[in-house]
Length: 247
Ligand code: MN
Image 1 (tube, rainbow, N blue to C red):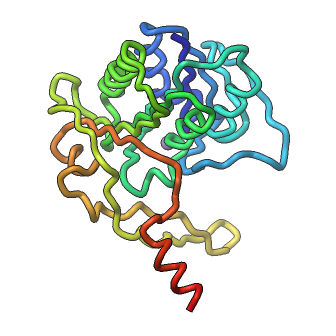
Image 2: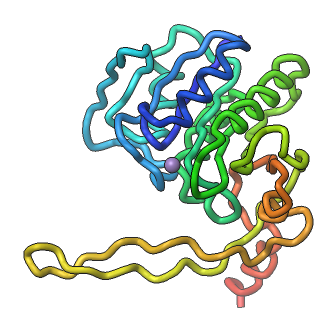
Image 3: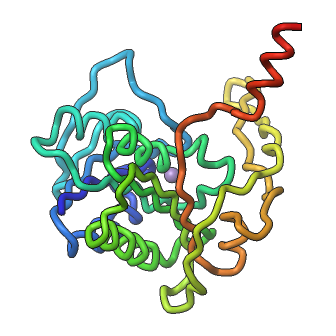
C-alpha cells in the first residue's frame, strides 16, 4: 500500500511524525507537507507564484505552499505513482463542526478525495497534545481497514481522536458534523508603530452537539468518524429560491 501524508501544521509537526511512524507499518510512506504552519488555510491553492519542493533530512518533502498545494502537487506532478490513500494530520487541535470549512488538515484530505483517492483527515482533540500516538494508532486502524476492505465508493473521512491513552478511548462512533456558535470577536492590540492590529479570536463553543454529532462523541471520550462530501448545494432551498427569484 502506498500512502501519501500531509498536514497543515508544517512538515516538522509532532503529529505528522507520529502518523508517519504508525502508518509505515502498513506500506510505503511519502510525506509532502507545508514548510510552515498553515492552519486555517482551508482549500486554498497558490496561483500567484511558483512553488518549490525540498527534501528534509528525515526524508519528508516540504513545499512553500498550502496543504492543498502539497497534495495537488504530489498527486499531479511529484509522485510517479498514484497513492492508494491520502492521510492528513495529525492536527494539533480538533476539526469538528464548522471547523471543517477553515481547516487545512481537512483540506489536504479533501484534495486527495477530489483527485479520486480515498482520504482521511485526523485531528487530536485537547489542549495538551500528549497522546499523538493514540490518534496515530486510530489512523492505522482505519487505513488498515481501507486496505483490507476497500470502501467501494469515493470516501473522505474526518476523524477526531480524544487526547487520552489509546486504552482509555471509549469507542469509535460514526457521526455527522455538529455546529458551533458564531466565532468570538477579533482581539485588537497595538503594534510597535502604534497601529491597531487584530488577532482572529477563538472559534465559538459547540451549539449543535447532541447525540450523533462529532462534538457529542468526543465529549464522551470516543473517536468520531464523519464521512464528508464536497457539494455545498442547499438542496432543500432550491424550490424556495426559485419561487423567490420568480416572484
Ligand atoms: Mn493545524
